Image: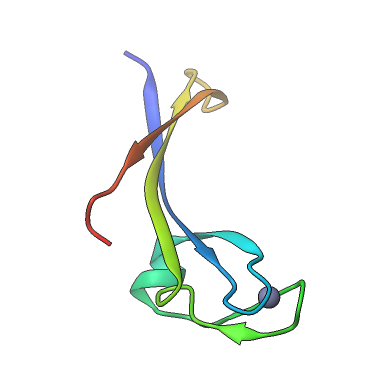
Length: 77
Ligand SMILES: [Zn+2]
């Protein structure tokens, strides 16, 4: 049985120039933190501009090194 680790990720798009971002959901959605866009300098809420959310599943070897990555869609947005 392989070990697994998970990361809940939200994809959002800066409303000004449409630059896409991937952030940890606990930060972007649960805390509803604002993000400073590196492209246009706009400060915006990824929670309001969220377009997708997914769970990344990391398959690990016995030492914890990543062997493979899978994704799962999360319905709750
Ligand atoms: Zn921007």
